[in-house]
Structures are given as structure tokens and as C-alpha cells.
Length: 191
Image 1 (cartoon, helix red, strand yellow):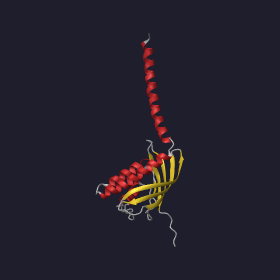
Image 2: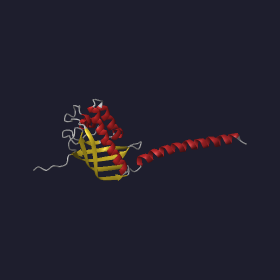
Image 3: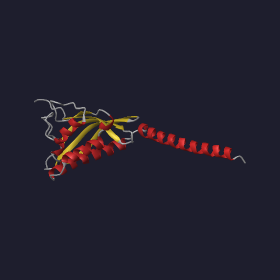
Image 4: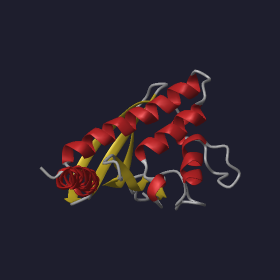
């Protein structure tokens, strides 16, 4: 028996095994990114987003680190880690289009001199956020949802109705992330 041939054969088998594992890992990452988004994933993300907004206000009301809560919220739900997010908040008229993390954070918690009109939407605070999707369009690794969402003040009173269009994509780890946030009050004709 030729031990050199056996050693070469064994080395080749080990090398092929390692290579196939690496290809498999690479393919699984590709599969995660290109996997089609489902309407249920969008609905789950919306529900969690609303709970996050309520949490920011709760942390603020309890004199906690609400800015850290808002930063975590943005990191969890928005895809700033992989590029620009198109963010058009409801209550903005001077700097109504924002493409960076700093502008979105200011809208939620205020306190940034670059955005003097921001009053801190998420620290209002709110007790509930309810979503009413009019439609969700899914195209591969992107989903767009449009409808109304309703914010209930923590101090009581009627919920406020806001129109929205959100676009989602999956990041490189397969987590659904917002890449477009557009919201505004419904049109109210002058009487």
C-alpha cells in the first residue's frame, strides 16, 4: 500500500470538505438576503416598531436614558448600517427630508440645534400605536407598505391619525429593516 497516495487522497478529501463548507456558508448568506419578504414579516416589524416608539416615551417619562432607547430603536428598525435611509417625518417643515441617522434621532427625541423645529415625537409620549395597512407590495427583497397608523397619547384622549409609506429590505443578516419612512397628516381642506 502506497502511504503517499493515501495521504494525498486524505488531504484532498479534507480540502474539498472545507471548501464545500465555505461555499455553503456563502450561499446561506446570499439566500438570506435574497429571500422574499412576507406580509407577516412586515406586519410583525410594524407592531414591534410601534412598541419601540411607546417604549421611548415610557423611558422618557420615567427619567431614563430615552436618547439611548431611541438610538437602539433606530439601529434595530432602520438600515443606516448599510446606507442611506430616506426619512420624511410627520411634523417637519424646515428640514422635512432627512437622509442620516442624526436627523432621524433628532425627530424622535429633539435637542439637536440643526433641527430646531423638532419637539421629540417619540417622547410625546404614546401609549399605543395601531397600524392599518391599505396595501403591502412585495418585490423580492423589498416590501412597501402604505396606510394609516394611529398614535394614542399616554395622557389619554383620542388617537391621532397619520398617513405613512414605509419601504423595507432585508439586511445582510436577514433582518427586515426600514429604508424609506414617509409620514404626514391627512389632507384637511379649508372650509
